[in-house]
Length: 123
Image (cartoon, rainbow, N blue to C red):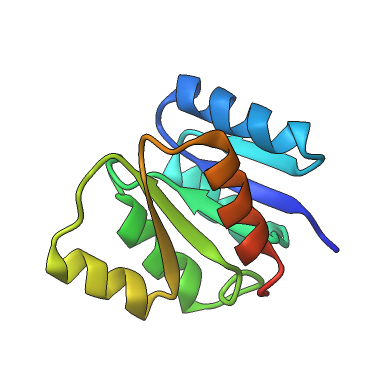
């Protein structure tokens, strides 16, 4: 099974923490701090899962997910929105429409790993 994950967050500290957790469990992680760069990678590579933060500029996590879902290799790849922002009803509905798992920060490492593994095999 492909266990390659794209991790998008504008916080290098958070990227380090999450990627360290996933790498500990033998998951190959590609860290990106820029959504435009992440979209380029999504077009070029096949991922088992894509995890994105919500609050980023110039493109937030939901806008990024919309672009991923449009076409290409990863349009059916499991997506996870990992954010400290409490989503409103409209954002929650949009997550559902994008078939995106929503996980609130802070999250316990074991819980995050379990959610990743539960969804990584759904592609």
